[in-house]
Length: 595
Image (cartoon, rainbow, N blue to C red; front, top):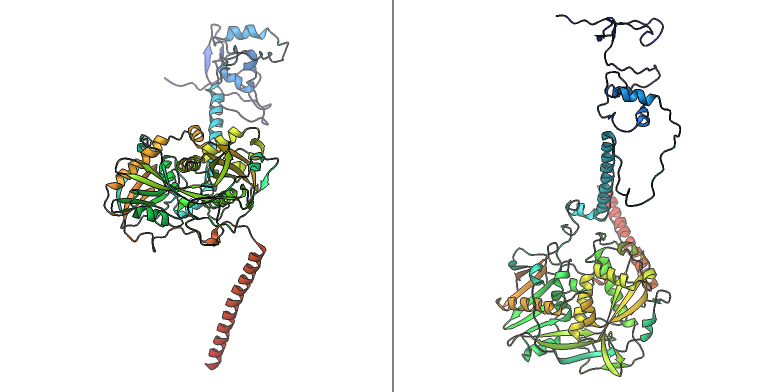
């Protein structure tokens, strides 16, 4: 059986097949005996046209109307819809007798539920193209996020190359507040999920054992400050602020010698423990067990001395320490603002309220900040009492009675990070501003509230302080001052006092079971948990000082005198190596001439 190739026609007059039919490659015989092409479509073309696809398997000839099919152009011949052997040949013949009169598209129906979810069926090819387009958009968005992530984490790669993966809360670039030494022994590890389940109610009200220091009155004119009537933040360089740890406090030593309690701490240390589940940054507390007594201390220049900024925010802060918007620089700036704010809102006319004893940390004739230390005692159980040194910053008259007050300041450094511009929102949307701060600084606000509750303050004033310009971290303005009652504010921010005391009680009970010695409680820099280490007795005294904060690194405004002294120092530093280089060159010339 052979294969009949047939006759290949030759057209001497031009391109393409001749006008007269010739025997095709594949023939079919009808009843008359003549031969015709068998279901082979032909598309006329010229040499100037681009050849399309040979066969389109994605086209659907059954979709749409005749206009949709005719829009396919040259590729429509591959539909086999106009062939006599096709099932649609009859319909195509009927359609050919119709003429399109109105070429306008049909009017779109008005918006309504009847067509809101109606979607036109799509050709497989178009659907694939849209899927690919969505993939490309997703890739662009992912690349943009990665670019922003690497922009804020440039130092991660230099530190170890770990900043390119994972959530920024799990990034290992955030280091511990204290270097864990090899000779330390880890005794216990407590997750924050355990803290959230604790509850303890102090049976009795606290007792004031002693009040030291002096307080100035609050200036009520600051209650009328608003963004349109802002006040420039002043600097108080002559007033001294003291951050003395527990065991260095002479009053606490005296109370411990008189056996007034078994546990001793400060309000800053207790508030860090009470609000530990809200903390993100690493911190540490030194615990000393001496006999049957416990002393909760902080290290010199500890992280507890600084105020965190945007600690609980999802927005990334720059990691470079020299950046004015890095976590460290903002903490120094916030501490500086908070101290100056607490002194500026006072009536500085020399009228002060004095107490039992003067400031225990001030020298004679030294100008100190307005502060009073209340040494208060709480009863945890029959055998355990705790004494804490609590601070109040001012006093005011409320209905003829004196009321203690704490003064703290929130600071705005760049509205782009928080998304809320205080100058525009403080008057009209004060609740939104506070809600944003509660989201970004939940731990700081909770610690301030806990300190006000421990100190028995009747009011707590929150100041809103912003930079004059987002790139100027030296000059600030006070935009508003708002007062709250500590108990009401604690309820507003969901701060449970029973849970706070439950955390303290559990830590005290755990430490009471330890042997005499020195221990350190460290918040893990990445995971929500704390660890207890046993450390040598001489730890943190000489060689264990980490992250010093010298005076020259404190954020201070530039002064003309300092600039003059700095220029003279730089000139002297440049002259010294030049002189040394000249002497060395003269010595070399002398040796060369001798040789």
